[in-house]
Length: 252
Image: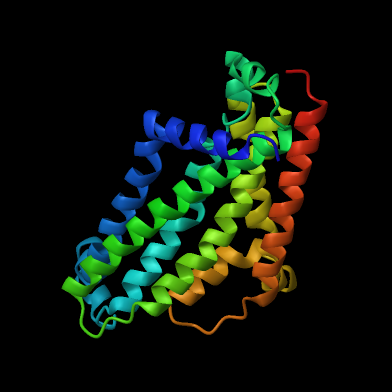
C-alpha cells in the first residue's frame, strides 16, 4: 500500500489539530465521571423522584452498577458520536480539494482509506481506555471490592462494535458528497443495528448483538462472544473493502 505510513502520520496530526481531539474524549470523560456517581446515588435519586417508599426495596448499589452505567452510556451515545464526528473523514477532504492533492501522488486509495480507519480507531481506543480508567478509578473510591476485569472485557466488546461503526462512517463518507449526508447515513445505520439487535438469534451470533453483550458483560453476566466478535471483524473488513471500491469509482 503506497504511502500508508505517511498518510497515517497525516491523519494523526489532523486529529490532534481539529475539534475531534476534544469531542469524543469529552463525552467519554463525562460518562466516566457521571456513571459511578449516579450508581452510588441511585437510591437517593429514586427517593427524590418517586418518594422515600420507592427506594426502600432497592438493594445497596455496588461496583456492578457502575460498570453497567458505563457500558449503557457507551451504546448508543458514544457510537452516535463516532458516526457523526467521523462522517467527514473522506467527503470533507474531497469537498475541500485536499483529497485531490493527496491521491494524485503515488498513493493508493486503499492506503488512503485504511490510514484514516487506523488513525481513527487508535484515537477511539485511546480515548475509550482513558474513559475506562477514569470510571475505574472513581469506582474504586466510591465502592468496595471492585473487580476491574469485567469492566475491561465489556469495554473491549464495545470497541469491536465501535470499529464496525467507524467502518460504516468511512463507507458513507466515501460514497456521499456531504458530511451531513454521511452523518445521516450513519445515524440510519445505528437505528438499523439497534432494531436488528432485538432479534435474539441474530443478537447472539453477530455484530449487532455486541452493544447488548457489552452491557451484560459489564453487569457481570456470562456472555458468549466468539461469533459476535468474529462477525465484527469480518463485517468491518468487508465495509472497508467496499469503501475502497466506492472511493475508487468516485470522481475526486
